[in-house]
Amino acid sequence: MLQRVLFDRRIARLYVVAALAACTPRTPTALIPPEVGPATAGQVAEWVRSTQPTGYLMQRFKWQLRDERGAAGGRGTLRFAAPDSVRLDVAGPFGAGRAAAVVVGDSARWTEPQDAIARLVPSYPLMWAMFGTAREPAPSDQLRGIQTPTSAAWQYVSGGDTTSYARIAGAPGHLLTEVRHGRTLVGRVDATLGPDGRPVSARLTVPSVPAQLDLTFSASTTPPVFAHDLWLPGQH
Image (cartoon, rainbow, N blue to C red; front, top):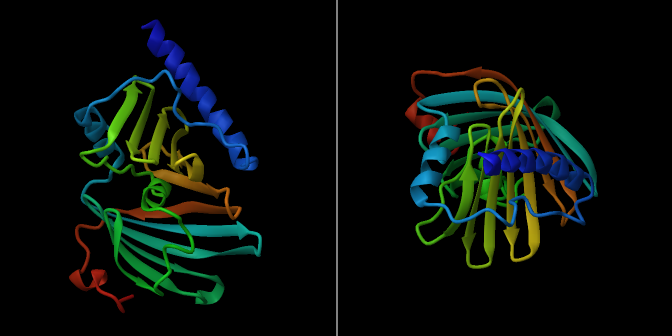
């Protein structure tokens, strides 16, 4: 019990550290405490499922991107179909700069234009994290982690690549996600969660650019189904 209490306090402090690291991305700290021990694939899979919507979900959001070139923003819509398919549509002010994509798991089925995902998000786990959803590890990944009633932390290691998650219960809750290639921090996401576990906002910080992408979610609906042609290119 004492170990769990201490772990919960450590995870709560991690949120503060992550917020500070977002402001000073050149000196990032590791998301998962080094004392966290091995985890099983079953433990992780059960937790991942708890982060995923069921059935169909449509959310509208505002986006704001800041990098060394300046700032840009607009609106977007995501349409999620369980377990791991999403249609994204984004546009700038007055509908300019439209882009769309369909992503299944960790690959894009199509994008319009071709770099629609890459120019905004450097990895698919970070993209999913901005929607409040975690990805399952690959069968060959080495896993560490721990879960308590108020927090959870998981880490997947595949060769030199590491994906880490930390979820903190509360009002609001937070899902922190970090992706590293070797010692290089690719990006970190802080998704603020509402009472239903879905994100109300999310911030992606990419130190190498540096860049910051913010999403603020508004309307959310759960339609009974999506039209089949929604998943085809050229449809709006």
